Length: 201
Image (cartoon, rainbow, N blue to C red):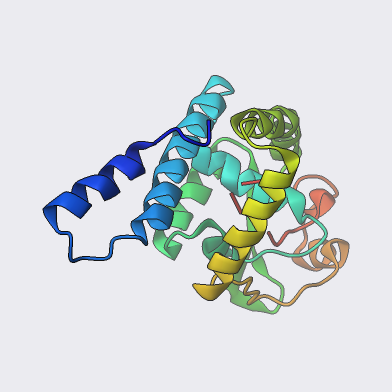
């Protein structure tokens, strides 16, 4: 297995013949990260489609669900999803239409908007989460637990070197207090806890 070659080995070999003077060794990392990302993303999309969700829909729901005791504003959600504010607004509009999220202005600052899960959004997120995690474990079954830990540590080091660090722009606060201040009911966004969040997901 260790002697097997992959598509990136072939690409590097071709460059060695075509342009022997160019150091393309970084392709060994970047090429594999890119190809692995595409393959894993495709597998995740196919899995989520079987459960009636687009990958981006689950990204938003999972981000809100895993941090539901902290408020999440649109700016933070945009950063977590790595999409523009305009694209995020369209996505939230879609999830609002599906009854999966609520959106309301921040008390005392109507230029800031909070987003939270409805009871149905919470149910959908919980319903898919365990199966999604099991699917991710299946996709990594070619690696031992030690391999996974080593790879995760190296990828963390790479991401940090590229400046990928958490950046909260909204002040954390008590979800119940915010719900009361904003006039939301005991269900939906107020009850689920307004949130701050990727890649699970």
